[in-house]
Image 1 (tube, rainbow, N blue to C red):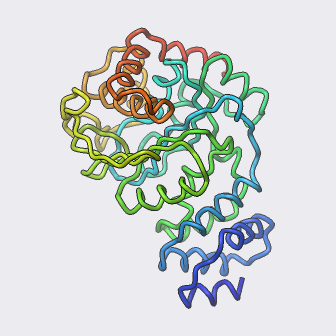
Image 2 (image 1 turned 90 degrees about the vertical axis):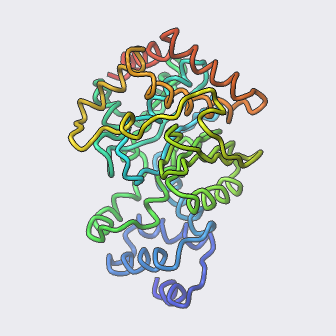
Length: 333
């Protein structure tokens, strides 16, 4: 590690193999915390490279609990978080709409870090018991089209850096790893990012690891398609800026999709359920449909966005998305 720190001070970049080995050594407790702290700060101050991020990702997956869902070719819909917008659980809700449309969804997530309610909060709020048992995970995906992978049950390495990250109280490269370490290595992923720098970084990462992907960013800073403004989408095929009108949808006010300063986890759960039940306001429903439509388009790029939006709408309005939630809860409670 001493040699690595010397190289970081000199602004040298590490290879993917080197950062993978470092991550494995961290998991095996081969370094004192002071050196790990210096390593994280060195990367943060210089800016992490694509290969360095891929190496850390590989190390987390190699030292974690493996999950094989490859025969199902699932999609994950996830945001980086940290946009400070405190929206309702848009990506998690969109997952059930996509699953209701007949696609396999393997959602990877955790409890809230920068908002009131994270994916794990809303899933657990329905009485679900998290598991890393492969047989149970496959059964859930086969019978409900949906499976949830609660991050702490899989990424063993994270606990070895958790005290340092907590003490630093600033973002590190580990904040970028969450979307990249879904243990099932999904065939497709839709990722929401909070800024264009992150979009460029993840675009280069996805191209190297080989995955069907779409990265979205609303120009007003949301890490999802918020419909509050124009939004940019980057895929394997193209980069394009869309407006809500391009989808035949109205622009929504930020207040309509924010939980507000006094939002509780129970409030977030009520909104989540109301959308799937078809009883919530049109603005929030349309935001979920827009995200689900682009996720479907990642799986089937030959379809038009209009077709994908119609598929998503049918899933929601027919209550198929709600039935997925009910079946999933039944299988995992």
